[in-house]
Amino acid sequence: MTLWLTALAAIVGRELLRFRYQTSRLVSAIVRPTLWLVVFSAGFQNVLGVSITPPYETYVTYDVYMLPGLIGMVLLFGGMQSSLSLVFDREAGILRLLLTAPVPRWYVLFAKLAASTVLSVVQAYVFLAMAALFRIDFPVLAPLTLLPALFAASFTLAALGLLLTVYVRRMESFAGTMNFVIFPAFFFSTALYPAWKVEESGATWILWVIRFNPFTYAVELLRFAVYGQVNVLAFAITAAVGLLSFALAARGYDPQKGMLGRKPRDEA
Amino acid sequence: MTPGARGVNEARPSVEIAALSKSYGRTRALDEVSFAVRPGGVTALLGLNGAGKTTLFQILTGLFVADAGRVRMFGVDFASAPTAALARLGVVFQQPVHDLDLTALQNLRFYAALHGLRGAAGRAAIEGALARFGIADLAPKKVRELSGGTRRKLEIARALVTTPDLLLLDEPSTGLDARSRADLARDVFALASERNIAVLWATHLVHEIEAARDVVVLHHGRVVFTGSPEDLVARTEARTLEEAFLAVVRGPAASDAAAT
Image (cartoon, rainbow over all chains, first blue to last red):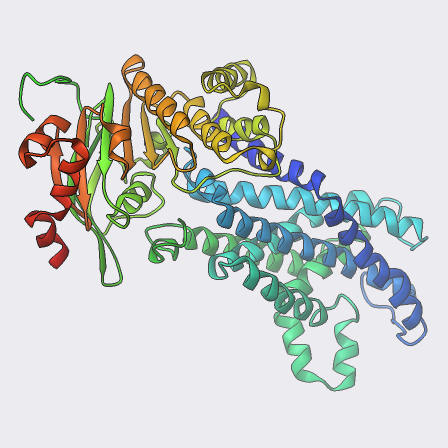
């Protein structure tokens, strides 16, 4: 048991160390959503009237509506960044050190996910502080009530990223894939506009994509958590998608069943 | 193996490889490979580039799974209990593996912790390994700033941090100069007998492993010779081990293997 905990601490600790050396990563992770929150929302403040739907009890301004979506964006980027770090580890050969450690393979992947989750949650809090600085309105207790939702959402988004690394093996292709994943995930969700707004516009197919997009549920989970509420459906879907992605990724990294054993020189 | 030759060791082999085969598509990387690695000495795995050495190492470390055959490590089937075997294993891969952005010390600490070593015991093991290779003063430097030779030494030091019972070295002298190569060979040979550990040393540079107790020659995925270096020289009527090795991989057995 000590071995497992020490190995977990080693993997998480290394990611934190690496993160400390990459200040640009934190800066871009915070600047990106802050621009949306401050600039984008200023432009659309009066265009997009947001009516009263749960969890909101009164009329809210657009920046308030956007906040959970942008926290989701921080977690989405965080999850993808961390899977990028796994692709990096594979190219640098460090993955071999991880996979030859005397712990089961799924546990190594779990530790990687834990590291990613911790990093994403930290970034989300920095962004939340930024939002407070720009006087975005949210309940005083939000940082506390958000915590479980932050962990659940970032675990799921990181697990999806991990699953991606099973199929996308090269660093260069991964950067491209990230754009294909992040932006559709973000736009086809309720991060920037509520689903009924899309429905009203008559774009039914977009509404369907939004409904099938796991990121939508991560955002809704966060949105309700800001106000101390639990959206049970959003939680159930987020948890299910997270666990399923993790299971599939673990299977993908299993040399008996997965893809790793098939390519001769890939690991060399 | 002729009785009475040096290194007769009745101890149970640390690794027993039986009829191991592995193909990539239509390429047969390993073809019914069988041999054993005994503790207390170095077993040299000789083979030209592409002989299947690295594939074999990937199977021995659990990174790949063989299509057929078995590996027993410390008397236990590797596939049934890989983590128990991995805990007693030290590996140096052919391609250098470091986190270049971390310091040498941070790299070693990371590895030690991955193997459950921390605190005072971990520190002592790391200091010991660094001192053994004379690189203790470079510990606070980022690996990116270290020379290729030092990085290599750091990798071997890392493999020793956990005091493994079996050391797998895949062309460990890559990137070392002549003197460092000689030092490395001397250190590893001494370690094997001092600590009674088993060492499997894959290389195509015959002079590095002249002092090996056992030699296994791998050619086109097949074992074409197992025995002592003296046996290899005697069998081929060569003057040196190097000549003997080349004779075996060019000889009739080799061309048979190449034809399959």
